[in-house]
Image: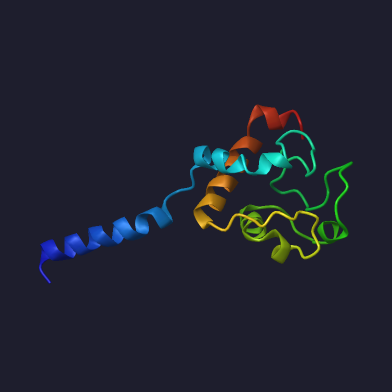
Length: 130
């Protein structure tokens, strides 16, 4: 293999796998979050609990929110890994959860959504509403 063909092959590999390893995009994640707005909000409870203060919080622990027994007993602490698993398929991650949303099947969408939630949780809007 010549040097030029090796460089071309390497560039082709980067073009193919580059999008899969791209850093999460919080701005795009905000667009994905629009799917969540039917039931959730950042700073207040709706049909689903608020998302401000999500990272590090024990699942099923927002004061005053009525959770399913399954979520209360899930023994999950929300972080990037647990959110990714839950968002991929909520009913598989926490059988018996009241969240009947089918999930976010695309890994890039989930990564972008989680990046948005991380950014939003650092915002001053979330800082005063935890």
